Image (cartoon, rainbow, N blue to C red; front, side):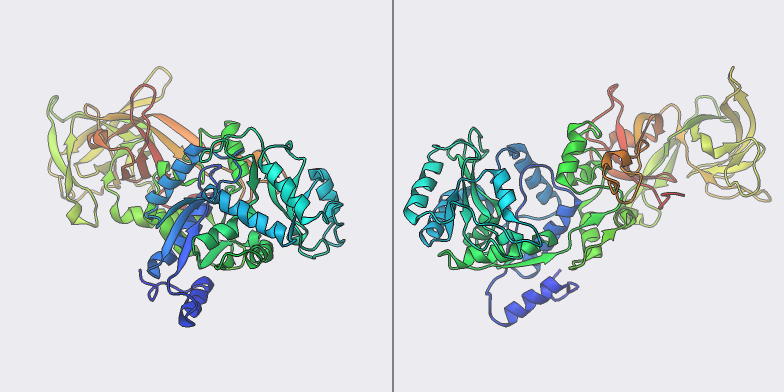
Length: 551
């Protein structure tokens, strides 16, 4: 989609004005995740925004890892993030790590010291907090704030050389301890962290730059024109500008903030998502109930649906909470148009056609998609015994029930009309078999003078694929988990229902991992990445055919 055809938002209006004024020759954006976890649907909004703008304006978008905290970062998160960005349909112009710039960052820190704009502080973390003041009271200056340039340069060099223990010293910007913006009250620029092995730089460094120092400089080094971030960084923008205004860098990106994505019935905090994984409340980062891109991919969501969802919710400066139904609507719309139709019985009940020849099998054809003939047909095998869903049979029912009733007729999907004549019960008096007769004149046409109640799906017993089917509900019971303080208390105990006895039509035995289908009358499903312990295929429910939440 070109920039001219894309719906405008306030960020694109700023870019248009900048281009019209000749401020930039080429637009450059970046997506800068920290590799301390997996990306979630909120990150997808930022990915679609940053990469989409670069595409639409024939610009560049870099993928840059904000890897300045090796205590929480791991190489496999780097790989997972790259996979997610590619899967969403984007390719970065350049791949960078903030750690590439460690030497340059150190040099800029030295420049600030030389200008009297940074100093080495010996206050402990607890003392720094006490000196910082409050929103209504100014902070107090550190007793180390007026060290000489020479002493600060010497101490900072010795910090780098590893002479001082963790927490004993920091390098702080020298700005304004009375500023109403707490971020400008002499923020830390560097801290000491010994004994950490960085996934890119190994043990080369024992001091690490802070995000608010690293980020603007990394943007400037890469020639970023518009640095797009979420609203919680709005109060950090003065510090972003202060850093760039006071070093010799020659490029000053414009930071613009937009509202982050808040989605009902889930959490977006990486800390909380990590807790869900570490404490075993979910099976992993790619658990299909998780709002991670990996979880959504495993569940069966498509990149097209996620991009469509991000475009639907738009880009604004006002925080709001998006209904889960919007995300589910996006995947329904996508799959309704292109998911092949298949038959699956989740609660099998045997149906025996007593007037069908004992060993006879008849080849029928079923459309892969009722609205798209170009998708062709598939082979179906009708036999004397079939599986129907237990909910599709009643011994007695009123006229509103449009399925099989004792003494009544229904059509088997793509097959014949059958009449239920009797039932067989087991020792517990539970119905285990429905005995029927079929009308051989009803293939492709309705019987004359008789009313057929409806159409039900079925699976031939001899050729059924036995599978495990997993039905998913929302991970939390309430729209905004944790409002009372404990988000774990709001977990939905029924968020996963495992059906071990499902039977599927034969063609589903060849389904590839990740392949998506509409199970007729049931919903949309996807072949999981793993099989059940006994070797049966596993299918994950992507979404129901319609919104049934609370229904």
